[in-house]
Length: 115
Image (cartoon, rainbow, N blue to C red; front, side):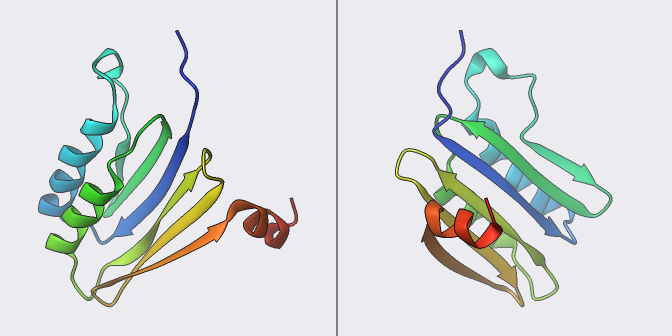
């Protein structure tokens, strides 16, 4: 039985050490229903951790907390959360040990990108 997709989450962070990757893995496994336990939300590509999720709920606050605990000045990346129910994009940028967050309506994002 398929469920309606309400949120899409895409992101990456690098360089990602083992402690950071494990912290993200613990958070990401919370997003999957038990019937989908074999699907991976988090993947590793060299020293980059990549998040890709589409579903009902993603624990974004827990994910950001895990990142804050491990974030160092050399980390770079972003986490985009597309809330299809409220039609908005929240982008978290990781740079120089900080998380910078912005929110925009998806219409503005689609207009900007030419869609």
